[in-house]
Length: 635
Image 1: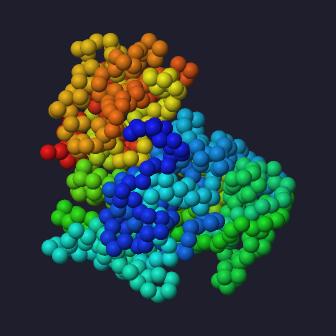
Image 2 (image 1 turned 90 degrees about the vertical axis):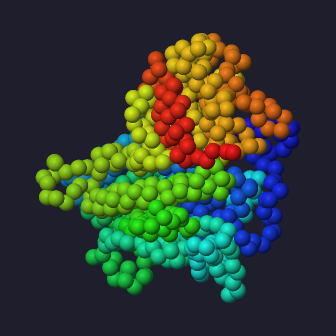
Image 3 (image 1 turned 45 degrees about the vertical axis):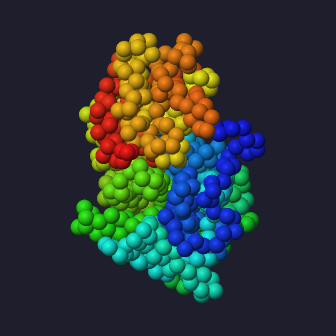
């Protein structure tokens, strides 16, 4: 964490100095906004937290509820989401409070007595090496608390406005659009109305989204005719795996056990079959006691006694998806720019058991936030906004397909229903293991586009697949010898990251490839000079970092080229944290990520931490050409 850049300031360094345009804590609803976010769920607050890094962008957040969420709802936090929270500086706080999922156990009917269950398998929850971050379980409400606190500490001082329901969204087009083409009518709890005019509106307002309806999008799909109950409970039980994530498939139905944070709380997902529970479901007469009884039937011969209920719900499994995540009709994409967007449950809904809903919703917002910030701050052309729906709708379709398969296999007892002999059926534990990269949130791969390059040079960095998230690895920071994760250099600040993996010669030859690239990056022809606005920090748009092959004790930080020792802030202080070396106590990053040691390479990462391109060290023109397709050159 870096601070004191503009002079010594005591106190909590996470509390940023308020920007002159920051929102006053007791300020009412403004009449205009750059971005109006409708909904304070996971997607809405990730988006608001990301935009809070840009105090010059007026962001307004509203929600129809009367205050922050307190209990219940989603709880699974995938590895990729924890990586994303690290960009906000919130990962350690999240890990400290959460339950960490380490192993998963599997239970099935006892072959000698089908009325009871036995443990049939136990595996690692997350494959070794796929992320430096764990899979966590924590109440969604607490995650939202962390995000609101982050917003309140930001220079923007962003605070949500509650008890406001969006009843109308009107988007002006053409000559009548003006500076604020989106008009949103909001109704308060007393029936009064107010109007906010915005440049952009984002609907993160759930499955009954008013923004989605206003832009003519529909959730389309089918129910699976499966109903599940969910209980957050404190229990007394003799079930041995109550503090392990457990999948139980018995003759009485299926049960998923998710231990919760705090050491005592547990979540139970309980299958409610239509034959036994149909009348109660139709009468909406299911209670926590009914759910506890169902859990006990499934767990036999073990018992579970509910001592306290924190939250409970009953839901029907279904997968629904919007065809597009913005207001531009498909046929008008080339002629019209989007002004309204939808994210999270507003555009895709699915079951909770695969633990993907909240994670994919947050990833939607993380994808959109930096794009809105780049367009509103003038560093990127508005056409960038088309890529949000293009990228995230495909991800949501993959989620729908996965969720349908996952839910069906779990309810089917772990095998398929194709009539294959028992010995040839896929066990659910095998399926679970095979889908580990997906459930960790790490399988997303964006297709080539204006912000994702092609793979001509992928062989130079095989472990950084273009279109996939930048996979962090351990390194040592050269200036202070501190072991760090390279990926944690990325902040949720809208900057692109250019990682320079030096060739074998590195700093040793002034006329070598690495020095030549650094000299170019410090020149007037550099992308830094061409795309960084006047008055901005030198790394505000393109943050250059270097990874050298030599041991850190053999190198002098003062020998680094100027681009790796930039002067920043009001006092023109040197940033000493731009260069890294392999960590001698861990596997070498060049080996871990398959970097060509002889040639080295550039790895360009987008502001949302996805790899945009891999290029040779000498490909300066290709780098500039790629960035020119996204960023606007300064005058």
